[in-house]
Image (tube, rainbow, N blue to C red; front, top):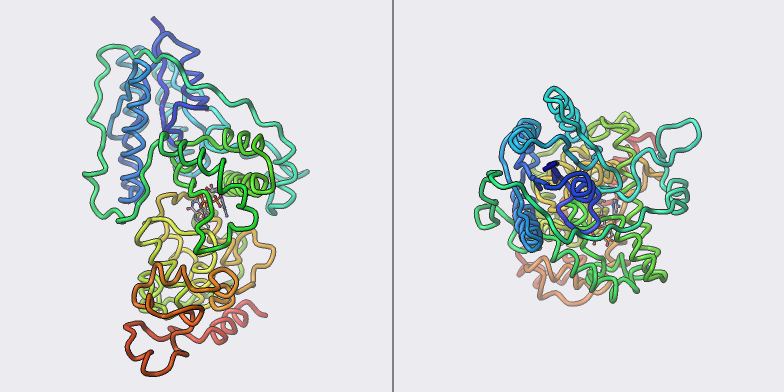
Length: 453
Ligand code: FAD
């Protein structure tokens, strides 16, 4: 009997999974393995919201494998050590894993390759698992990556993506392969109260209802904050409970302006991955240094984190993050601009806070989006400052998003909720809500002067 190991990482699914497919095709029996990586904890990436979503996703993956005669084998510790021990225990000659671009994943892959090779075993790394297009697949002439999205997207959109793989009918796991208990969401403390549930089944159901309904209006409504009209599939893409290739292909087959706009956003995800693959240091260092001498005011930072800046749209967004472990993209853009430009605070402060809460938080998308907003990344307009009042007029014109997330302002009607300082003094005095933390024009001026504008 030949045996191989399918090492699950950011691909917690049985549908369209090249890692699982290759492991099954290459052997009679397969060990579907997940290692609860203690290194992730040490690196500070093991945060409650993602740990809870991971627990849901592993339970769902285990159930799907059991339906096919298999089960998930879980170990805890160092990924290279544990994988080698499992491979040795079941006599597997091959281990299959998804390629990933973060510095952490690259080091893990290299250690795993070396440890397996020293035991006479082979590591197979599969692409088009974590991203729809592998980093480096399309490049501009003479350069290792695209620094601007539009030309990247033109090339990305012209590529023919591989066919979607069917889930396996049967999975045979060698007897006697021991497993630790699956982690459970109920064991995780400090989870945001409104955190979404994880798992491939939930993700597939969400994609189906999205594809058949709201996706049609996505091109027009994706920035409408109260409508909440985006897919909310980002945590599923982060954990790989949904396949990006499958989403691209099925959205395209559905067709229409909404599908086109949705596919374009999926390309943004790949874009940031290819930047990070080529510039791993961009995870914490400026991609394009602008000579910033950032300010650091702990009180201001605390007010931003807790949603007490006195700018209702900013505060609503920051409270959504605390409550759901997720935030709308328009709100991410605004809150990041407010921190890095209006308050002129280092983007790393904000990126760290987001990574501590976001259920979809990942190095490529979070860090490079932060850099994009801060003007140290790939934005072609690096000194643009988003004004919360203008953003409110455009994306929350009646104030419904603010009233949803800032209960102190729930009784203020219409658009006046965006300027509580302008309310009649008696009404203003009744509100337990702070005044503006900074003057918007002064903040913007300070930033532009610092950037030499
Ligand atoms: P939809 O609008 O439905 O888009 C579909 C998918 O496209 C998303 O699920 C996501 O995978 C991808 N996508 C959309 N916009 C972007 C983008 N700008 N960059 C990369 N991929 C995108 N996204 C993350 O997945 N993880 C993060 O840690 C993250 N941090 C961010 C931090 C900041 C400061 C900003 C401005 C954006 C960040 N984003 C991040 C990108 C984006 O905000 C989220 O992907 C999006 O809000 C997720 O919601 P959705 O699934 O409803 O998106």
